[in-house]
Image (tube, rainbow, N blue to C red; front, side, top):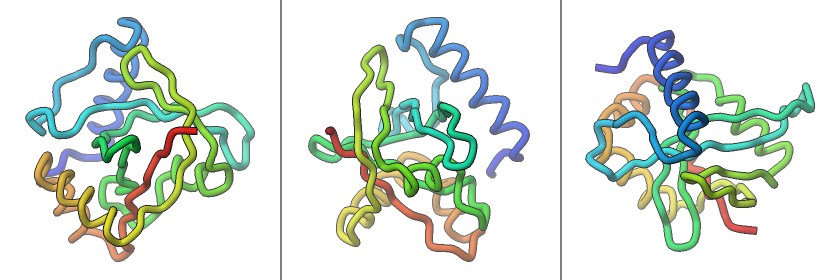
Length: 144
């Protein structure tokens, strides 16, 4: 079962706070058994021009990081993905490390491989795919 959106927002806010207070050393546990880990994506709002920080699950894919723009199965694209499409250069916080990245949509092969890791880590992603009418993008965050 997928928690309601208000509950997801509270959990992500708690995770962000815990990460900030611990300098990136701590995060809330997730149910993926370690397959999915948390990063914080730093983007610039495409309309506001303001800095944004979003917690996302990720998997490693060689030197790249793979994330999924699921928006919890909603039909609208998540704002962070729209921001990256407008400005693909951004940063990620992984633990205490801040890395400059460039975002791009995954190739078909990359998307299939990364999507399977997300579903293996959390079956909620399969539910997200069933719930929405849009194709859920897999996004590659490449080091710059």
